[in-house]
Length: 400
Length: 229
View 1 (spheres, each protein chain N blue to C red):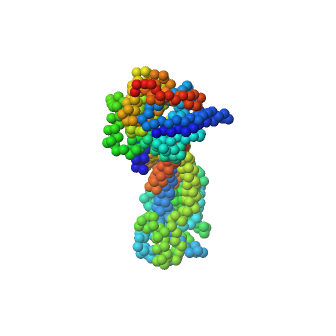
View 2 (cartoon, rainbow over the protein chains, first blue to last red; view 1 turned 90 degrees about the vertical axis):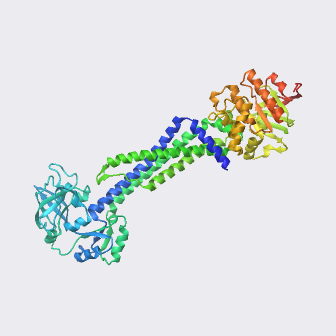
View 3 (tube, chains in turn brown, yellow; view 1 turned 120 degrees about the horizontal axis):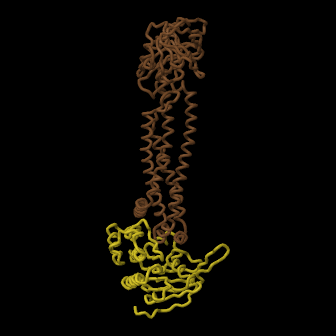
């Protein structure tokens, strides 16, 4: 057995060492490109998911969202609930929000969107919208007649929103009239404009809870409470922990809140990825098969000679499989280098998606899976033609 | 000892049957140097292929050392060729990616000979065939005669009991051919090897103990040679 492997390795090494360098390099490059193809799209999908997750946590929901019990419009006793939740180990901030659909009026233009009432200090402990102010300032406690507005909602003079709500040119210091669902109208001065690149946040506006509560007649009530945990990625565990600490309301993770849209997008991406992966692997199989097939057909006579002088056909097959494994190894290594180059480029120059810049994220499992599938197809594609040629009659192989 | 009993070999070419051998029987003793002669198409190469286990007869059997070699499995035949036979092809049949010594030692590797031993033996046998200074040259760097000597070195490196040679001098000039045949004669005498060689050159006959002459797939004549061996 060991002798056989030694002979197979010897023959494989000599074939690679003294065979056509052009064919060798071409095959390695093809495998490298297939590897890049196998890893690249999943890395972009992971990047989109990562971007969406961080936007969801940083701007939309925090890690968890407490919402009213079924049938209730608002959460009551918000202060008490906030205190209870903040005592739970691992919770680092909570932010009650009162949300309401409103119509904004500005210079004869109007736009329907959502106005959130927040406690600025609490909001800072959960989201990072305060870090995304591009003009003016974030809200302060007592700003009952001030508002901050998303860049899309504020808009640009003369530019339509393309289906998104926009007031086309609101500036910091301008006054905006807001019509509430109960018919009341209030005028707010724009204190700041923010840009998060999350469409739903950038088409909304924020004022203080006191301002909204006054209009809607609410007291110690909220539409939802955002909860920030110390670490990301353990939302389900914290959700259960909140419930076990006696939170009676509905508790959702940010993933559950964003599930509909993201899941659909990711499912579509996964289908594209599966097709792309399948096509890449088929290309790899076909290319390796053709290269090895041509190689073995060209070497039929040699294979016949080796058999004639007493070299077992399994040794001959193994020598071709070893060559393929060597080529696949170099191809995978070259693919890793190429992928690293592409990833580096896209990290420096990220792709800009509607949800924000997307940085490719390479997951080790994807790399391992890609390498494993490349090796599997290489062995199959190398074995079949080698087996076929090695099983030919000796004289047929030698005399052709 | 080689015993051939009523060997036939029929090739099918579409619906046509071609009888390459029509029932050939003979015995070759250990240490005999036998020449197989005959016109083109007489069945010489077919017979040698069957004796070398490169082909199977349609009927009849071949016994080598009392063993019916046609009954061996593919794998057993491969091992038999590896360990018991040496085969020299008309067109050398070297592996172009390998150097002279690598061509010679590749079968030693498969036999499990130690590296030290096969390198020593490989160089030694190449010296014996006069290629001591060409051991690291590849096929493309060797002349026809040198390539044939590499092929002979490969066939005799393990001192097989039977050496089969299919017109080994067909592509060589007279001087090189004579060197090759002298080498065969020396191996035959020194190692007591049975050598079966296909030839159609009249002057080769002086090297043979016996000549089996084939005609149309049958033995036309079988005669001892009156050479001074």
